Image (tube, helix red, strand yellow):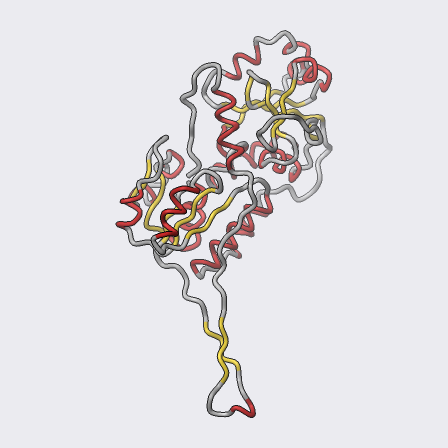
Length: 306
């Protein structure tokens, strides 16, 4: 699971949320099993090559909710450990699998080792230390980060390769979530925090998801000095200048939406006066979280463009 960290000090809440998002902004780099070949000893003049099929992982521990969900959908018998997450607890069957972490606590190394996994999948930058320890113990590890629609498909294929499963149906289900035809783009702005005002550009999961729905993200090409790759800081003047026709607010549970509605520019925006303001959950739009969360976000985006 990608941990949900919402218990912030008031002055640092929004920065910490986006810092957590930024942790997962390195491309997926799975370890792919290699194939080996051996010549036939009986006929050296007419040697044949025998392909040795790699043995897939049979006991996998997932440190993120999304990788756990993907593994379960590909082959539920391979998943032996999951992070504690409300997204996974919504599935009664998944909730029965051993939890190796809960809330803000890091994964429990002893619990993971006790499960005797032959593969542990974590998030780049967030699980580096525990993955290094597991690797030192001879346990195979894999890291991932989801910053685009393409990286979701790549992670799914990489996991399928590791556990010797067929990803075709799952990949096709992803594609079914996207619009079949292009929509008439309208200037749209996504706001994920109020202090500072943060918006995703095209180099983020949220920004790329807007691109997939042919939504005109007014912050797509904006670059800033923010250390959080994929997110930029906007001034109140910049928000007013962009004056989006559609406004998407992300509910992270800390009162951000109410704070934005209290800003001087709020009632001056076309999206507000025309009642084109939509609220999205943090999971799905900002943090992919799970396939169900992604599906809900896509359905809401489809309703907007329709």
